[in-house]
Image 1 (cartoon, rainbow, N blue to C red):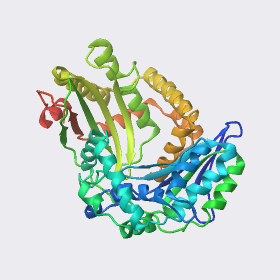
Image 2 (cartoon, helix red, strand yellow; image 1 turned 180 degrees about the horizontal axis):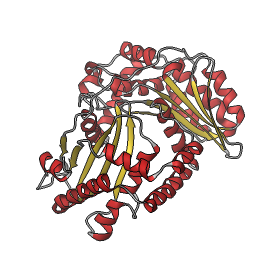
Image 3 (cartoon, rainbow, N blue to C red; image 1 turned 90 degrees about the vertical axis):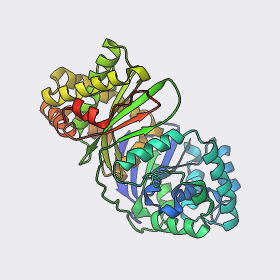
Image 4 (cartoon, rainbow, N blue to C red; image 1 turned 30 degrees about the vertical axis):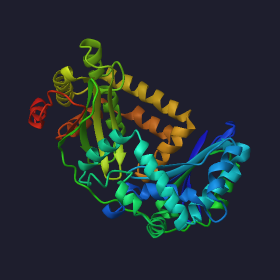
Length: 412
């Protein structure tokens, strides 16, 4: 398997993962446009445009785009979030060309017919009504408010009212602005002929504009999302001023994720207060975050908060050990090779990484992890955990620790 980064003549960046042995081919196209790029009056437009592209193109009808792929054992998929909109498929290698031809025609030559759009809005409203992602939407909304983004703007679906009033003019203007070669990335996984086919079909795409994300200031604050159930989920979010480093990822592995991590050892193995703890770094167009999250029973919330704060202070003040570094490296190495064996996840991560300015092939990332020192991880802990975090709780705890209590436990 070989990974390389190149550009088509129209400026479209392409991440090509060459694999001559896998019987499947994968293609994933991601646009640097999502809910973050909407106006309040057109909330939900990015997600709607994703839907509208499936209503018909110059050479394919809605029925074609939704039905023909199944004859090849495949389907065309679309997805929208706050930052990006993406489209992709996986298919047997021998059927790759017709799938590429359909996907590119849909992306490059959409029709945006008024009648089709009005019908598709009904589908979107139904999706909104039956979606089970309401809690995730609320969480994303609260999280991005930490970066100064309007909570309503962070709702990918928008509102029933805003979506109901979207028009073909709105859709075409959004598409013309953002769906360009200079504002997108394509990831291909397959044999060499796939690259030649893709260049042929993507050649007509306009070079166009490149989106630049607004700079947002992190605003540490507490938030709470109410829901039923016997458990409560808590999350601490620390801002990252720069794109995360290999040392930051080692730090996340040391403090959470594995059974040998600091928090899991204390909260699960020793005190039996939680089932699992996650510590990780995530990137958004508005910035990076280092987060720690876990779930517990309502009655144990204060105790869990205390332990999390104690371990953050301890690792900030005393650092990690050489053994912890080696253990974290081995776990990260396993995760990366596991990702390498799952092309569906790999191509999504590569596209996001590229648009966020942090694309590194797995082979190169492994070398970076192997070079990290204890001193570098300790510097990461001192930098990240010296900042005031946002503190969120999902659930209906009887005792919700206030923000002053949290900062006191963090010695801030």
